[in-house]
Image 1 (tube, rainbow, N blue to C red):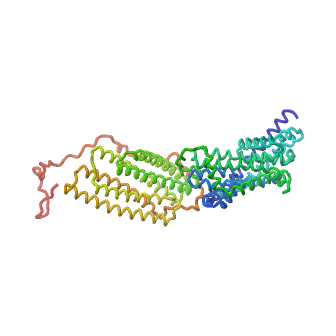
Image 2 (image 1 turned 90 degrees about the vertical axis):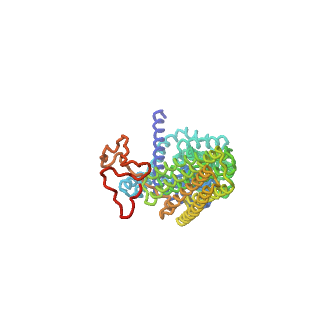
Image 3 (image 1 turned 60 degrees about the horizontal axis):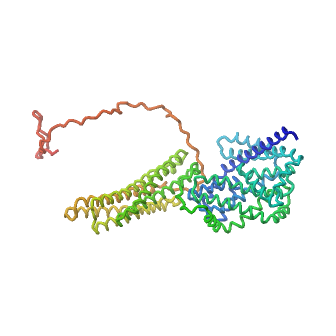
Length: 619
């Protein structure tokens, strides 16, 4: 066979592979747009139960394959919406679901590929503004391109079969020796990593089996196991920039597939006997082996999901404390309800940090030590950074088409974030007051200290309630009940604060306390007043009838609003004189004050008008 012929066949093989990958992507994207978002909402709601999580993962894996599904799970974990233990059941299900989708591909449907391409394109063109029809067209078109790619690959591989060189090369990866097994697993892993798709690797094995290049399951078994390991790279790449829990989820996926491959190799004789016993040609045997391995592995690991999660945590190569995660995941931007829930969770974390800032400041004040003040500064910096991140995230969410309720929540969350940031500022101001108080040698008596500590306890309780009220999963009634409690506690605080201020005023009048001490006492009380006032503002926002999250809308996508680069009607004409920079002179004084006495009328002026018998008013 000449070099030009070999080059042509290799090009045909690569072109068919490209068509296969394109078809698989179109089919997966179409299914994901048509039903995947609903499955994502379902996944968020039911993953507390292992069996339900496994079923949801299987369904998602059948639609979008295991790699993208596990990447989605990593996003949930990174946002704090799912735990490592609950994610393992979903990952196991995604692995099984991927094999079910490949069962469909194993059927010889390439004779229908051209009809599917024509039908899919017709559906897309006729869809108009009906997104479901358009997504259905993408699925059918992808289905046709996938089988067309397999047909083209088969035509490219066919002439190579007669040369015997390809069969000789594949014999090195046969599972009849230890070296062949290791080489087959390595080749399958590398090829799947490069293609970023285990389905593409399995599809190529289907082509080789369909053209007669692969005639024995032992030749393909190790390559199938390698494909299962290689699909983990998609998830590993998706953990870049995430927290340690998300990285552990990706490592759990890798560990499960590696251990599953090792277990399958230990049971090699069983698989080489059981799979052919199920019947079918070589293509179906490869698909059955792919499914059987994942089902058996999942059945063994699923009951041990929680111990397996603990094992992954112990084996994680990091003894450092896990960093604070962020709930603001970019994957939720185009689903406003999920993004709002994530923003509420992050706002709640911000409120927790602001409350801890107050606690640390008061600890230093009461215990007369500066050690907690370093923690105050650390918390204050974190609160400021969270404010910037949340506001930027809300701006991005607001650029999508939101419902009236969602738009209201985004607007009020923006105000609540600013209020929490001010709570942190006032808590930090306590540190400055304590430092200045000690520098000026000002000391409060036991009664004044007890009063300030009482105000602190009341303010801290209000902040705890505020933190609880920001849970996105609260029902509308529960949130309003918490907001009502906050407003009630605030009223009690206001009564107590006014009483203490009046009592302290009397002490000053009775000369029981000097002026400087009284000034600092009032400054401390004012700090607590302002902290509680900002909590009241947040509670008023939460009393709004529309301030609640709808979990059943977690799957609703939104389109980004198109915005013009310039105003539609041009620029509004503005009077330039309003921008004057000259200093405005004060108005002339009408008359001198005459050293505090009544103004004398100027000579010739009429006397001031007044009611009969009533002296003119003083100015």
